[in-house]
Image (cartoon, rainbow, N blue to C red):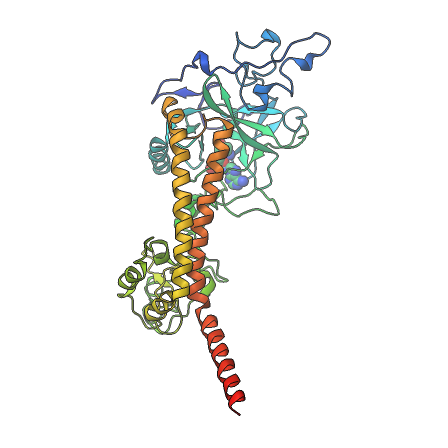
Length: 458
Ligand SMILES: C[S@@+](CC[C@H](N)C(=O)[O-])C[C@H]1O[C@@H](n2cnc3c(N)ncnc32)[C@H](O)[C@@H]1O
């Protein structure tokens, strides 16, 4: 009889994050938040229950400082107060974790432990794991500078799979001066149900994985919304029954077969041709192309912008340059003989755009928006100056450690600045797109005046 029970690939089990590239931060006394809870035996919830100020700000109480002492219930990460879970083998998604007891909505399930590493190291390791053939990704985002890597060392949380309709979520908590990531139940989870959360972390290149979560709103691939996903093209079934993807094209055509290299290069037997050839018809509409008009991003913010635009775009030419404001998308030959990828690169109709942006109305409108944008930028930079000491004190370039009121100020200033920038760009686009309407309106007005004069003459 075969007594061997299948086990997941080996890893080192830890229940505390490990710090190899830097030391664990020591919590300074002045940084310790002390709540005002009081333990009373007849009301156990009084000991750092749902009204605890620390709990409400996702901060664990510090032992020795909490007024509730040993009764404090707000030290779940420190005391590893996890829900009961169990490993199991899924169909097609490797190992997974399931609830081994009923879990209540909002309950802390488990901490995502691993090695705390810098973003640079995360990127390096991710590529290294990829080339070592490690298919499962265990690196998650911690903050602007750091990640947690549970590939070699981690807690059971490393086995929780992704779902586009998850029953858990990740939450960040401050514990003794460090940020830690916990998995929390989003809803009541019955015993035996698989635990899942949405992998909202940046997918560092490498192979893409087809999502097998089965949710109706499934986005198709793990990390489908990440930047890394844009690079990729093929779905294959691995030996272990998992689907992986390499080089997924940005568009989804009705026939997904690979094209030959000659097709991809636009040679005579191919359907597509490189930009500039009259055979190619772009499936990308003008509206879609508008979203990615690159030169508009780089229009300088001063009164001489028209001249600069003229200079910047005077070199663009092409067969379609005089047909519309934004002409053909270009096609990048795919070196691996796959379908050509449509790139939303555009060529501009130079004279038309210059003419439209040169109108007095356009200039006035754009300059006014530019002014608002400058005010927004100045406000943002002054708020940043306020925040800087707090950031420097905490030796990290994030707003994790500033007060809520300052963070709110920062958010308001950022929104103002983004809105001003948006207004500026949309004004430029509107002036390019709507100028003919304005011209027609003027013609109409002139005609009305002329007709009126004629009427009076008669
Ligand atoms: C953090 S690990 C989860 C545990 C993993 N299943 C294991 O066996 O160790 C993430 C990896 O699990 C697999 N995975 C997780 N969720 C998936 C899903 N919804 N569909 C397909 N594969 C999934 C992918 O290979 C992914 O890189």
